[in-house]
Length: 295
Image (tube, rainbow, N blue to C red):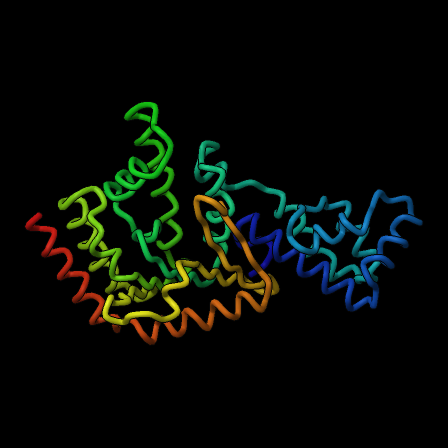
């Protein structure tokens, strides 16, 4: 992936941070040494600021990137794509694609999804947002979200959330692998007709080449699934893989710590082995759809 091929600004920021950190390390400078030299040149820098940039917590201006590249001795031909990335990393394309009223909690996730090469998700309570029907999404918002002011506002929220699903369409879409705890197929969100249509959609999606849907049955008992849901997003190199989680208490969490990401990657692999095969999962989902036809 290059700086000009349409990756999201959030992902670009992660890529840029990793590149700047690598350049500093190749130059043989610690953060403190780098800051000392930047201050001599009259820049307004601190170790805390550089640390936040390298840890993806803060953005960085193109002129600041130029200062860092000069300090690290990066030659002119190699600077150009990095500076292009610095400019693109400050774009906010989610505003264009989704509108300014996209919930704050979804903005980072939407950007990561847009730039990911692979998305792996284990869920224990709800159908993943990228696979939901409009009626199912509406029922989730009504059941869990803040009080909606009007039917128009509700439909706007539904539309915004469903717009995320465009990321799974088209030739550049990421590979998506979802493992659903079987309780997701049993919980009647929105009632029988809503669940019937949602199960039918899941059954249809199981036939798509870049989508994998597996069901972790209740009979599988205890195991790595009892530790709760999580999402793994693989990003274009050099950005690291990201572990994402959310909850009413913790809010949205993004983790790039290699040990924690590796642990959840292994956990996902174990869950995939424990879950039904793609064909068996499709049969279990179709059976759930038939059950809800009679509700």
